[in-house]
Length: 392
Ligand code: GLN
Image 1 (cartoon, rainbow, N blue to C red):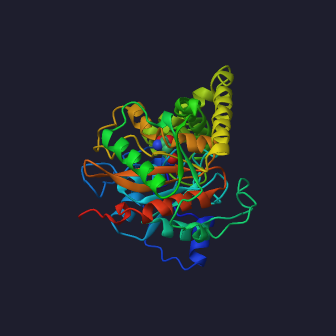
Image 2 (image 1 turned 30 degrees about the vertical axis):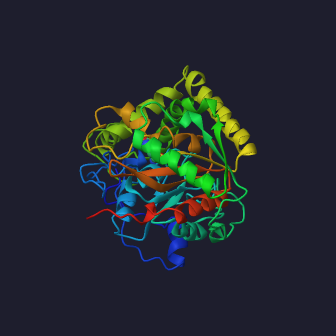
Image 3 (image 1 turned 90 degrees about the vertical axis):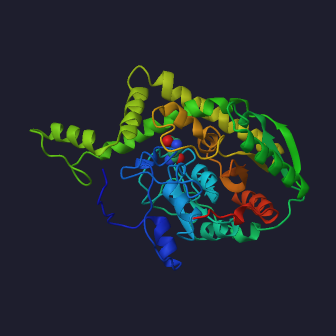
């Protein structure tokens, strides 16, 4: 739909980075409209995982994660609506950070699901993550959801010990079908955090976790179908004018301009919002969303941070999940609750399963990015995982 489209203005984050001296190397591949977990829904071509070229880099910001992982650039940006920064970062062995909803302005970001979308960095280590966050975070009146809060200096959080911090491990995130190597890496990482001085509670429970994915697949497609209504071939983007009437041209434009997954989301969202179904689906999903948020609030009364896996499995093979959208959706079971609750979370390299990178997921309460960076930095400095690079 947006092939050859040249944006007439800069996004807020790009403006901030250009002001700070950014040297732009290029734009990266991703799933079409950020819908996907493998970059195989790209409108152009799939991206491969630098650790194993037969495997996916994750998605939707797969190009960003692969480029940073393969040392093609120092850092990249991505957007995260349900895991699209953290999951590819985990699968490519780099750091990926989704800030609190409202922490980074989305002005200039192509909207997917406006109550969930957030921009963040993909970097080689936690220090670079803090440096990029210092530049892109902060209030911007052009995004009405941008939080009018001061930005701390995130490099102040780079402290190499965890004395006095309370870390919880929510049991519900050890999901059925989780890879043994991933589980072992996460358990070893939790022990490491304890060694570094954290007080660890392994019995934390977030009982509504299992409903987050279903809730997401009502809310995200509903918002996407509204956001994507603007691609009608009239003002910009792909335009198919072979029809006899304006309506026919709009239909042709959307039929040929959107890929299959995007059309699937538009249909799901249109159905969920249609008269007679709104209360059963959308309204109920919003109520479940509130419950999930409250459970996180309660957990953060007792814990400063929660740690889980980012992805239940390491990078899967290209083509392995393309035939079954539900299997693809399940890749995000651990990352989606974070977007539903609007909280911040990071993925940091924490080991390998069958030679493929594993990511440790660290979450904290809204606007407590400093705690996440502190835990991530202490863990990173005490381990060597972030120094591993694929043999290319
Ligand atoms: N994989 C999820 C989806 O397809 C999340 C994508 C994202 O965070 N942009 O919707």
